Length: 583
Image 1: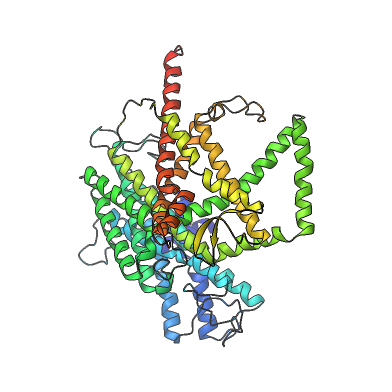
Image 2: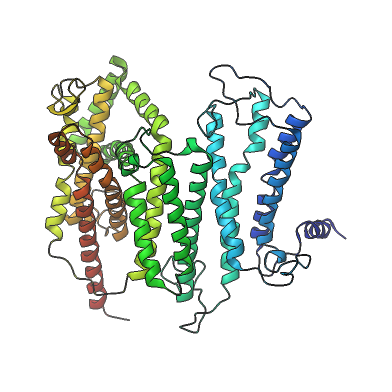
């Protein structure tokens, strides 16, 4: 018996016979998942039960960066490690025969087939719950527990390296389990045929994503998507209930521009549980009651979009566009220099000179970077929650679209140009107000002495604050330009001065994708803007606030403008295809 055969025999005895049709990568992924909890368990037992000097017991000094570990009775440490490894070992069942047919030692069920959802639903919920480990590891690096409280133990030097080497695999547990669970679901359901068409429900390596869906495959993909989102929703509800400090919303939250600012932890957990249960029912009814499932998907999408998410999504997009604007300006200057444009030469000298002057004469740039970094450090977790809710809303919207959409003749709307211009005008007030922050008369300021919004700010802030406002104003200018591109020639054909791709048609999805994404982000922010306006001191301040952030109008207008662009481009492509002679 050679070494390979011996290894296979040992693995078979440990994990059971591999199921038919399971590829090698899935087997090794399941084995790797089963081992993710082992290093941390060994570390806990060695450090806590046997006194190996892997950790320094005692209270940490102020400012310590200690990991999240707890002291407990020896039997609890051993039990936790054994149970964790046993739960991780269940992943092997997703690639083994005992994960498809109940083993003979199981009473009553022995020899019967394991229902697919009986394995996939717990695995999906577990994968969602295990995503807390990456968050916990990041918090431990910052010296805090997942609740934000200080740590209780200290590791230094090589102890810290050993700790993170043993606990880092836990961050992979959830993602690896999700991969194996998806493969298990597809493998167990992939041998079914389409009951309506008589053929295989599968088409291509990943049915449905490229339009090659059979009806059965499409139903399975919708059911899997609904089940995954619902499992994640229930997992989040459990996290908020058992870890009260993890709840990001409510009156105590630092972000107030959202409906969720008025939802405390108890009602928030209840709403998420109701959403998860309703989503599970929708997943079960995708095949038998597709219309009812589509209605539920619409309700779920509206819940996550308008209630649980908020304007912090749009705020983070605005700050993310700042480096894009700066890189775009630098790229245009570089292209102009290559094409020997005099203006580009002048800008190529002035822009670096201005940057060098700002670095040598003032610390505004460094303080601006510190402001942005500290802002994301404070609000980063809260922004991440809003993004997660927005992603769930998009997932349910996709399910709703698949339930109700039908192939229809698309006509070019006559109102496309007017709507696009109106959408482009929406960010103009904000752009003008923020661009004036580099002048002595900044507009759209908040007077802390009166607590009202003033047309001309009395206190414009320091240089770093002014720079921050100016740069985000450039992001609003970019939004205006890109929106006008939906009705411009350069929005359909790349300008000739662009290297290599100049003169080529602009891919439709290159414009539709970001445009639709922006429209969704604006609609997500709309309830928060209205909530913020209601909380203003007077109706005048509320009107000015909505004028500066016209998300309730801007989002629908931008969505309509993107639809008009898509309809025009699609109609033109079909006309060209019909006019071209067939070979």
